[in-house]
Length: 143
Image 1 (cartoon, rainbow, N blue to C red):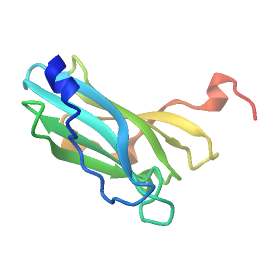
Image 2 (tube, one colour; image 1 turned 180 degrees about the vertical axis):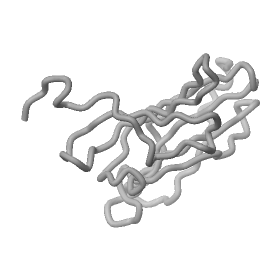
Image 3 (cartoon, rainbow, N blue to C red; image 1 turned 90 degrees about the horizontal axis):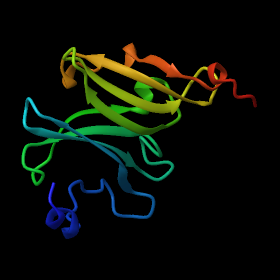
């Protein structure tokens, strides 16, 4: 990552629409040294009423040169049974397993939670196998 690249303000993910309410954001990045590649996690936002609307989709893109990025995985809020996906992060553990951390609205109680998906490859991350990490009740939060 160079200051020139950061200073250029280069757009690396296009919007999926150009009217008000569309954006790509909530980014996170992970460098995988064994692959000499960068991974970008980001969220796609669409206006209410445009399926999948607000908080409706999150993606992972890969780059080996920080200029060309290719989406390698995506998930929608429906796959979590959720009203919205918020922020995500990606890491590869010493055990070789990928971990995708995701904050979303828990369909059980309508409050935000954080879960993790684990897999040997990014393509095998499965939202149906999400394991809860943080829930408001467990933290002692009250309504």
